[in-house]
Image 1 (cartoon, rainbow, N blue to C red):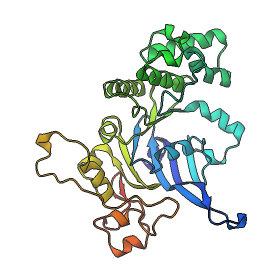
Image 2: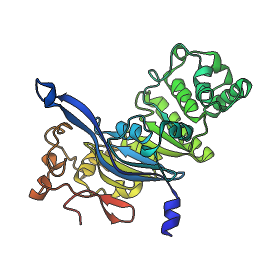
Image 3: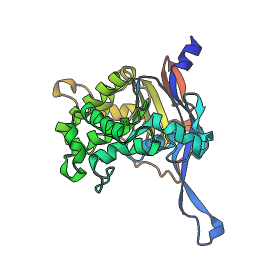
Image 4: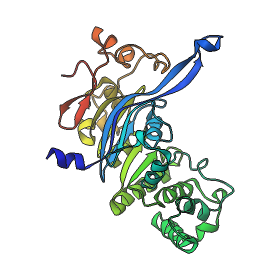
Length: 330
């Protein structure tokens, strides 16, 4: 049974760290620079055909995790196994063979499309780069992809400025699917869209997952959307995962104080708020340049103990699939 579970895992991340150079520590060059710990030791698995939702407040490292997995940011340390191959150890030529299988949908459809290129060229460019098709086959594939995301094939002759935000994001989705990937990273794909369009894009992503047997890493700060699309949810705080669990288990029984505070802030219908008290977090998020010792959340945690300020809690399994990094949870 254990080997079957391992075979079912498409992406396995272990000890992933990504540090960026920060400000100088002094006037002289030999004094060096500080390090911005954007991602500071992250572990999780994504099973084939499922969606892992990655949530947390802005600046916690969600997008950096995504780009580090895809090797757009070379990780500082750690391992990223994709189909049992450690991407961090592959050469550039070997990575080029892997990239068609793992694609990304960017957050901003206005910034991620080249305004000087037609829609047909934009969608077909991944095929051109990888040399997967000839000119005729590429045009046919572009028309197929446009229909797949709910757009008419004649859009291939248009330019980004002629399209709405929702249409542009559909173009971004079509481009990501051009090389027939098995892993798609959706980096806050609806955050810049109108509310009326968000549901359409989310439902499109769900249909595509089922139709094409895709695996998603879905990044968002909207917990209601994450609950709707995800099989499992991981909660990040200041570069670390503090809790990860099956979706309903996490929403029905959040164990980490930070997760509890996040869920208490989700807007609810009036009839569901009776007797529910919102948890107000005090203080500011610590700097990733100089994070506090021990648990990074301890300075803002209402339940913090002395050990929380001294030792970093390990991400331990409390129940099947439910892991928490908290000294209070046994």
